Length: 376
Image 1 (cartoon, one colour):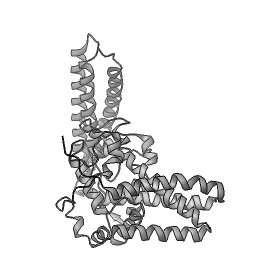
Image 2 (cartoon, helix red, strand yellow):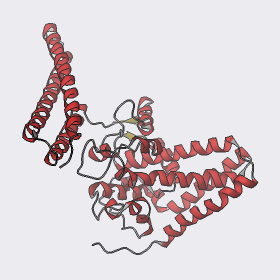
Image 3 (cartoon, one colour):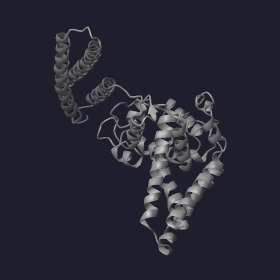
Image 4 (spheres, one colour):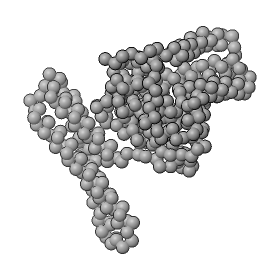
């Protein structure tokens, strides 16, 4: 068992201190001061801005480099990320990269293997290991990030103080600006972010991989600016998206996509649909075979063979689809291609796509039937 590191009293006093201050001041403010929708509107906007700076900036830009942007956008991300009060980009990325490299192990800074509350908050109550320069060597070449890391505590106090004074001046309510837009915003944003380390490893589904504890949970997406599709993220960490379907709630993805359309972001990395589908098939097959091992049924051997056969057929068809699409794109670009050949290839792709759709539908029905079998 790993030796416990010494307590970090500065973190303990800060985190517990602002929780106690908020608990004491919030009821006093509501009782003795007049609130306004303007204050709550601005505070909510600041909550979302600082939250997106963490997810789109600290996380998907700096930690995983899922896209690239210019220095001005980086500066905005760093400014609002500093307002979020979650440490410097370099410290945050160092811990997060270690989390991905050693998920569920002792080397993982906020491993859930040590319990829910350790992953949620208690890991910050211990002295942190020094930043590993090899882990964040790319970030150490960024002068802005090095500056923020060096003067982080001062910058955090200055940015939050100035923002609170500005909101107090706009609303005419300096007390409310301090209690609502600083303390309450920080409390909500902290716990929303910490949910990703804790709840997103406990409560949800593992559609892409069961090799780690991360899960997908739509409700958490609403609270974490789209970060709740955590099983997908840990399986394909280099994708700029967490929610890959059009109906997935992922405002961070929408922000990055918008920046790209405005010419402010480039090199957006995403996983091909076929690879995602293959991973899902592989994981579902593993789950089905595991379920059949402990199920009460006289057709276990037959069902196991069917699961393997269907999975192999789907995987092969996905591979064929990739080859045909690649060939079609090449022919379309080649001006010397025979039009009739291109049309025939397009028709073949359409037929294969229909076949895949039917087989995928059957695979899903088969999977549901197997998962409903009673355990021995």
